[in-house]
Amino acid sequence: MIQNLDSRITQEDLKFYQEALKEAKQGLSHQGIPVGAVLVCEDVILGKGHNKRVQMGSTIRHGEMDCFENAGRKKAIVYKKSTLYTTLSPCVMCSGAILLYKIPRVIIGENINFKGEEDFLRSRGVDIIVFNDLETIQMMSAFIERCPRLWNEDIGETGKENSSA
Image (cartoon, helix red, strand yellow):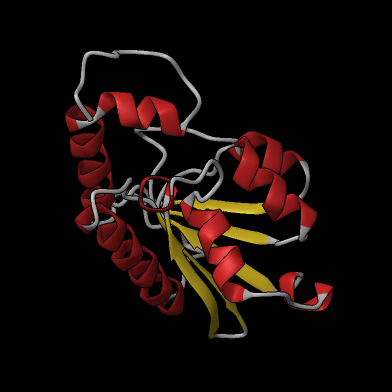
């Protein structure tokens, strides 16, 4: 259930966001961190991905980074016409990739559990839309409560280290 439906969000945006949410759930089902992303250009999905840091033993395979990797090399003009759908507010690493490829629009499912570099992206001209989907918020919140050590590792923080995750 979407909490804040920005008037700029279209039915197509909601459809593509659901694909990002499916990716997050897939990551969770494989004992990973539930963050998913989809890159779309002119109503065509170029790539999908989910956080695979656990599954691949990767230092950088956040959901957005996995999505970019799965999309493959694209010409600069393609990125400049694309929208990135992500279930969670992008961290500094993923925001850097968004800026590097000049992706003009990012749809974010939630920023309650983690607020990334939205203000920085906005300051660089990226159109950021956050709609705080209740299902996404609850999925992420439950994960963070269940696996705080893994979550803190993923965002580069120290914190409650008493979890066995």
